[in-house]
Image 1 (cartoon, rainbow, N blue to C red):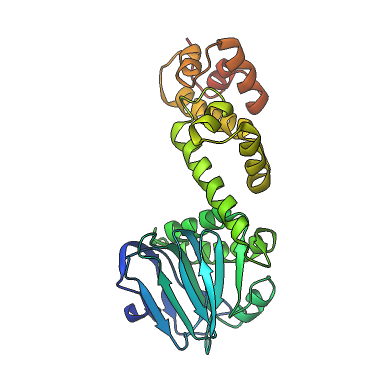
Image 2 (cartoon, rainbow, N blue to C red):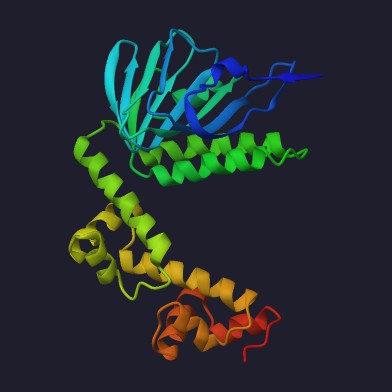
Length: 293
């Protein structure tokens, strides 16, 4: 027999938008359980005060700013802030009214829960900073999406994503939160969002730097620091990933796909595609059952 694992009273109502996955809980004690995972867009008046919490929890800030009081210590919340709490750990979370928080949380329990948390550089009652918050965000998004499929595999898949999150934390977390790091990270996220939105028409990474109001050298340093790649390589990867979709999902000529993605020279498009995909665009389409015109 199953019971609902998460009391609605534990979820804040001071939000503008949210998505959650809170699975049913088995009566039999488990080694590890996902109690609830969610993403919350906070209202300007968002404020949560708790003297304790029934399970262990990890939260990640992905947008906005705010304040956290954890066991009596005050911390600034901004992009990339990670913090954890649990039973007997008092905490207060408030948002900046002008830059409301957007944050993820995951609550978990079971015999292995404390061991799992103690294996990473983030103990209950501690604050850290994520150097690569997008990678952690993707895992949490997958946990919510897969859990809400409500298939017979959903709980197991969500649990595997929880384990993956804790495997990823050691390489994503730095021990102290520096304001300079946070500002650089926030700019990187802004630049990446600009690439993701405009890559089809962006001719070069230098053009992106000009639109972002910085030098190409600064943009390159930011990408190398937080993504371990160059903005040029990131732009090419976005273009070629989209080229794959267009080659397989449309009747556009190969050269038309290149033109659409900002390649003025079809031969240059073909060379870049082959370098990243291992074969030419026409062969790629043919090998997958489509004939390039």
